[in-house]
Length: 475
Ligand code: 9WN
Image (cartoon, rainbow, N blue to C red; front, side):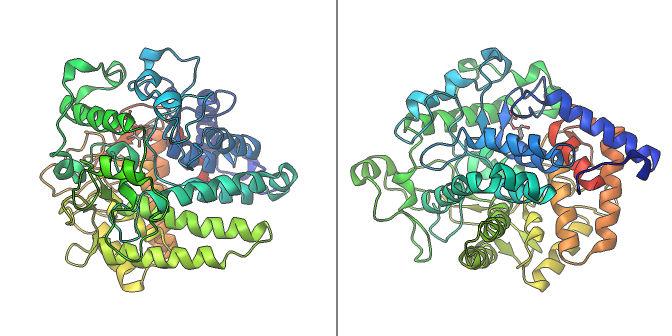
């Protein structure tokens, strides 16, 4: 099968890299899922698990399937997949915000939070259907024997329905995130402007656990955390309900649940603000939406494998691609930008998320070519001044090569760009990026993120998706 690994067939350096990457995933495996990092992130994270499953399929298709099944087991009945599934055997003070902050099983009851497992109440990028399809492809025999796709398909469909029906806050057909943690690039400078409206929770009202494991200069600031806490607490205090917001869109092509929202709740909570309802933070992000579109295409393939028609989903993916271009493409920047739904305008900051739509097969050729030019130009330095593509504009005022999502290079975004380059026929550039990613994963000991110029390790080492995506690039 495609998962069998023959060490004799690989050159020695790569075979040892493969073994070391597999060992990281082994060390981070809890029995039902994989932690991103033993020290810093000791629970299950949503998009981490999707990337991890994509690598794990080369080591153990069964574990890869289990990884996704565990995550989907914590799905809320409104369809949302929570961004963290808490491990009850980990002490509460090991990670902040802990289950007693989110209080999902009580505060999230109306939104359909599960009773028996504790989760956060926000989401992360929808990489899951793409991951499920790739996991299936690694060992179709095992997948069919276990009924893997038949079991995950309805959950993945409900997840996409949640995003498209409840989270079209801008009314233009795209999904909005309501917290920077949802988009996954927590302190990206793209959020600075929309976050500036959020009154931070006082620093003394919470205790950060991340600084026990990470250098403060590599992490978000206390002011960032104050705002993250405020936004999450406000959402929790509204019962994690979205109905009050999703039907306030102004566009005709949106998928909002206009007919079924609870009107009295909506009127009380929405606060009469234009765009984004009464929310302090609502942003349409290019990477989040591009991953949804890639996953819609994957869901179409999953449906076809199960004997149903996939054409409606492919068509929806094409419509979403058109909406992405219409709402987030900026020809002058030569890349996609975030839209601040509250203020209504594009955010004039170049984050790596604006290159991720290169992943999409249906991207118009001239736009794909422009994205490649931008990636290779002075703002991101691909194939030039940087070793891996940075998370943020090298020339941006907020650029910092070590601070988390404000400049360092991350392996998941570089993996997505490698795929995007291949998708659009840029095989030479893709091969060079793949080689650089493998070398730096190796020398950085599978770092969480690295200095984009030097490849120096930042954050945690032995990081789950870095190891997993290394395995995927090796195959
Ligand atoms: C908050 C787990 C997660 C990643 C995110 C990354 C970081 C969490 C944190 O770690 O976020 O979700 O505590 O900083 O930004 O992308 O999923 O690896």
